[in-house]
Image (cartoon, rainbow, N blue to C red; front, side, top):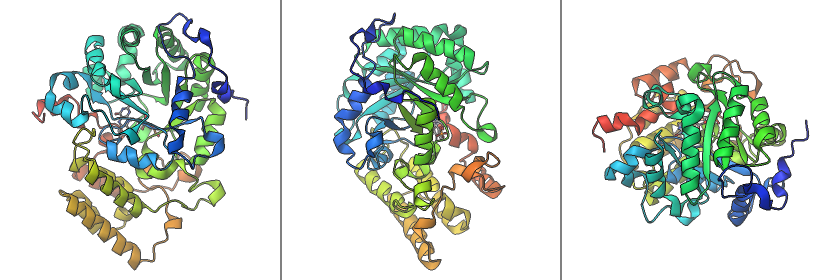
Length: 437
Ligand SMILES: Cc1cc2nc3c(=O)[nH]c(=O)nc-3n(C[C@H](O)[C@H](O)[C@H](O)COP(=O)(O)O)c2cc1C
């Protein structure tokens, strides 16, 4: 492995850091300082990772408040909210209430937190971000969503291509000039390749971006074409801008072996996980790794599901917690218990028909009975939902042609692969048209 210089962030702050042609107000090590301020919340953090960001990705209807709190118990030291639609957040009080308690913010144990917005109008984005800036540790612009709704709305991954990149550069300059928190951008690789992408990333940093989270795939890499993330590309981003801003590596992180390999290979300041940590929130602990002989040493999935429900009772996701209530809870149960549902149609039906909190508790009881009747051993648990599209990619997650039935079932019940990948339609313009808010 190469020398990546990842620990450049340990060096003392450079007073000249702001003098790089941009209007960024935050020295390069703002992220490391932030993590260190909250390090006492993670007494079990492995010493070699004490100043590394172990990040929960922004996920629509999935990185909701109760879910984030669960991941934070297991070393996740930086979380993103789901993408919030900036214009709806500004214009629609009902939508806003679901997403944020303006003036109150989020519970103290939910920090550090970065709030992600989508949009393509710098004035609207600024208005939305102003409503949260006093209660968060950073804001983020979604430049990653590949869905049709993002293409039509000219946001997400498509925003990177608007006016040859001029629009997103102008947005970042406007926001970083007018906000008091770091302005971050989560980006894909441009369809034209990494060289063009690097030019854009450099311009964003010049314009004042304080952190880049790079999803090492382009917008065509989705659903069955997801493929592996390009860590070489992420390493080039670190080489280009890593001495000026922290860079997060996103894509294909499924356990702590991947975390360490990715950090070493890319030199990034942190890793961001989405699908794998969705299924198993204790992902940032030493479990299912080489050193545990791939055994699960952390809590079993039933305990995870049950703890999540408990947090939902205290922090209902649809009350300022960025989730759509029972729909969000059902989706989490589906992912937590995917391995059990695959072999049991009654359990699958019970999850799909969960319309109350009591019903959600019954699902767990049902799964517990199944485990007891078959002598289930938590040590044998492996990721199941995560690997559903990862057939043929090689590595420990290649389990051969599985899950066609499961996909068919998901389609029937309205949770398609498209929803799974980035279900912007849950909270995007479609909801507005539906009169949901
Ligand atoms: C359910 C779900 C919802 C997502 N929603 C968002 C989102 O709101 N904003 C965003 O930037 N990316 C979103 N993504 C993409 C992830 O943040 C991440 O970039 C992608 O899944 C790749 O990471 P992974 O390989 O660890 O899964 C979503 C992904 C999933 C699975």
